[in-house]
Length: 99
Image 1 (spheres, one colour):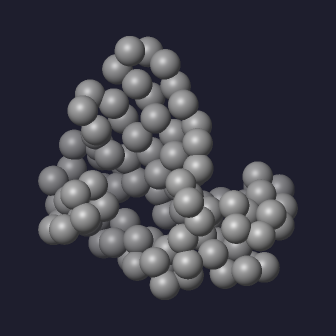
Image 2: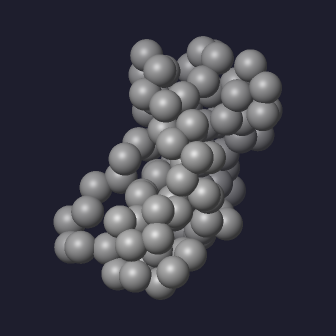
């Protein structure tokens, strides 16, 4: 995988800084945040398992370090970030934009 901002290749086996699952209108979406050592931006991989049975992997626009770090902080504050039905403030903020 490559950084979506500068194009630098991530090292093999690079792990996401944080991962969160969100339930969106019947679809499960998993957002994985990868930091780039080269430019400091975050690459955000979006994997959606659609209710219709289709799967989709895409990338959100690259996030500046400050934004990416704030999202990672929110995810780490969640008691169970892989629970798509979690109703914690972190899930609410990342889904709705406000807690």
